[in-house]
Length: 204
Image (cartoon, rainbow, N blue to C red; front, side, top):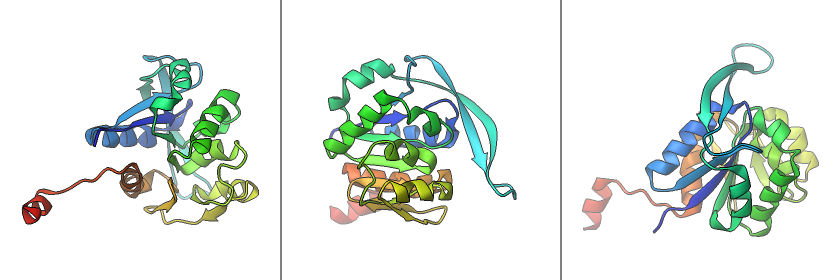
């Protein structure tokens, strides 16, 4: 089966791990991940953030590594039919890119075409900016997003920090500590099968 093309929506201060780990894991198994940010071109840099819980009432934020955008936003925007799925990474980026009408139109495309939609942490903020995307869906996200999910007509699922949830072709998770489970479920939705050598030997 040929690899799929996945479009990743990011902004400044998107969560570092949710960009780097996701992209590299998907590309390791043959998929292509184009990472875009409004008004950024391929080769431009964005700042990323590192969020963690360190005993305060909410998460802390530190500056992560710079990330090099690998697809010009306007080009991806004009070529949505070539992508089989969209991924909304979390962190602080979703807070502002969700108000961009072009980002909303991208999400609407994947929703109306019934293509897989993947969201982690604050990424759900991008989805709830488009009417109907989470309505009737069970969705995991950072706990602080629960009111927004509910008001948008979805059902918030309080996942453990290492779980992912699948509702149809929508995959969601609470945050970067769930990336292993999240990526595994995304691969299943994409139809990607990973077989270990022992399995191949038994099947022979």
